[in-house]
Length: 173
Image (cartoon, rainbow, N blue to C red; front, side, top):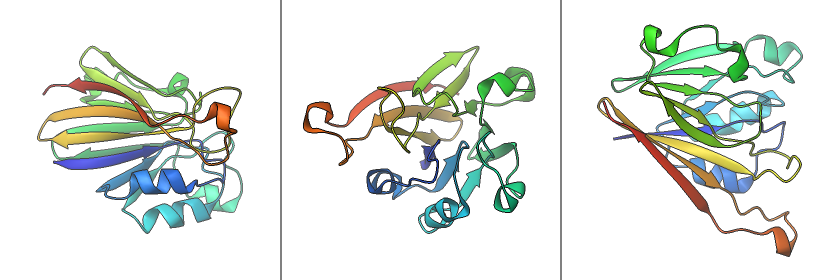
C-alpha cells in the first residue's frame, strides 16, 4: 500500500502539524498556492513532491512549477490542478482515478462517475472560519481511499481548538 500526502494553500506557512501528518508519505502532492520555494524544499525532505502552481504563486521560483501535473501511484492515475474550475479535460475519458485540487480552502472528498475529487483544504493561514486541514490517499493496486484530516493547530484560541477529525471516502478499482 502507498500513502500519498495531500496539502494545499500553504501560502508560505508550513505548519508543524501538517509536517507531522505528512511524515510517512511515499509521495506528497501540493495542490498550489505554495507561497515560496522553501515550502517545497521542506516537503521534499519528507518524500518526493509533485506540486502545481496556484494563482498566488508568483516570481521566478514559481515559473518552474507547472499548472497541472499527472502522477501514477501503483495502478492509480492522479491529476493535480489548483482550481477545479480550470479542469481542462474529462477525468473519466482521460483515465484518471483521482483529481486533486486546492484553491477553495474547503476540504472535501467526493466521488463522481468513479473518479475521486479530493481537496485537502488549506493548511496555511486560516481563512474565515474554514478548518486547517490536510489529506491523504491510500493506494492499494487499483483501489484508492481518501481521508481529510482537520489539524488541531497551536495558534487557535482555546475555544476554536479541535481534535483531529476525519472524513473518509473510497473508490474501488
